[in-house]
Image 1 (cartoon, rainbow, N blue to C red):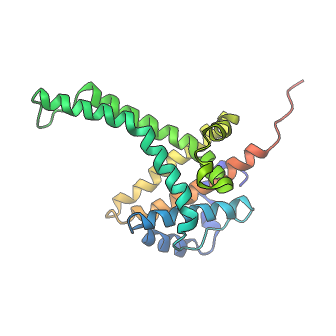
Image 2 (image 1 turned 180 degrees about the vertical axis):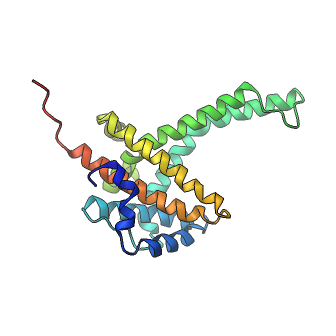
Image 3 (image 1 turned 135 degrees about the horizontal axis):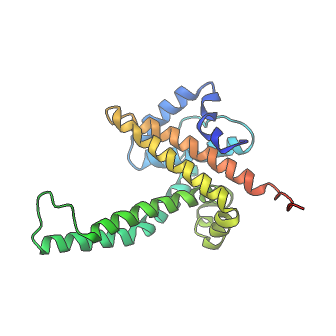
Amino acid sequence: MNSVGEAFTYPFRDPGWVGKIAVQGLITIIPIVGWIATAGWLMITFDNVRSGRQELAPAGFHLERGIGIFGVTVLYSVVLNIPGWILDGIGNASNHANGYTGYYTGSPLNSLGSLWSFLAGLFLDFLIPSLIVIVARNGFSGGFDLGRVWAMATGNMSNSVIGGLVIFVAGIIGALGLVACCIGVFFTIVYSAAINAGVAAWFERMQAAPLAPPAA
């Protein structure tokens, strides 16, 4: 993975990409189990790309590989979003107390809660490359070594920011499947997972690259 932009294109270099994404997409339809399986598919794809093979993982129920990164990202998401949910809940209670109904758009607290949730999502995207790399190396518990996660994420801020932005775009691509009678979202989510794997492989490679010497 020579550049982060290749994260969007490398999946199509695998001759079997259509079948792998289609079958994994069908597996993703299964609540919880399918999501963990696709998280495992992401991690195996990451292993392939980091080793120099631009090859998607075979479709399957990769639960053992997926449970770590799935659990880590879910727990991070919940913790980061708690303040936003609290603000939104207080705003809703205030709306009801003041008798607002119908098309009322909500109090400033609702807006603040929505803004917090959006920023929390961006922050999680910023952390995702580091989380994938650390969970691949150290397992589930490694994802909660906050000092190590933060050190990796901030060791080269530009890499984390670029990787996070690409993952944010990948999330948008994943949601685009909703326009295809909703069912298409499961296939775009799998493609989005492949992008995340590519970004993480690029990120790990860049973190290991020696720094350029200072200009004379």
